[in-house]
Image 1 (cartoon, one colour):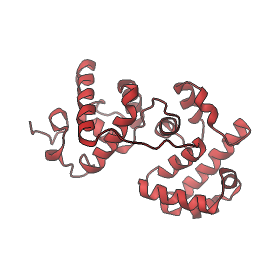
Image 2: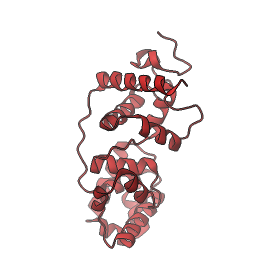
Image 3: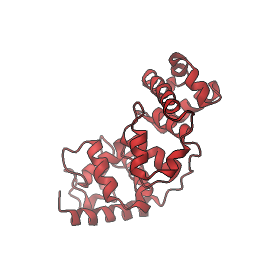
Length: 225
């Protein structure tokens, strides 16, 4: 991994190449941060399709977060069974809702909008099972805050590019990338990295010869320039 200046140059090049390839994503803002938090929990260790199916099933079974909070873990788990790890997620959802109400007196996270980014992240991370990525997603996609979620695709592509040091964890990569990526491009780059990780820079059999990043990539299989 090179010096900071070289990495910033590589970062800008990667952002621009992915923007040329995938465009600027159009993202629908999530209106309710509590709903967003539930969706983030459902998305853990599964794909978007299963997350969305589980969320629809949950909302069909229960009319509000308040009803979910009062339901049994078994009933919540049954409603979200398609999401995978549904017993863990059911306990996590119920525990988060109970903790929000305990700390705030109601099930409303709108107050986070008045906090600075660091303060809001720290508050969310007090909730059961909410780590850096989950907190960053809620704040970015609900409040438009300048956070940079690092999921498995973002971590894999950024690691192969050499934007984070060898041996980095997802949590340390989150700190590095959130500091490096310009605020106004965080959401764009995050989403485009996910698209690229799913389509080209896959965990197994990455399609390096088709990759728009292959001339700036540190991945051992890349020798294409």
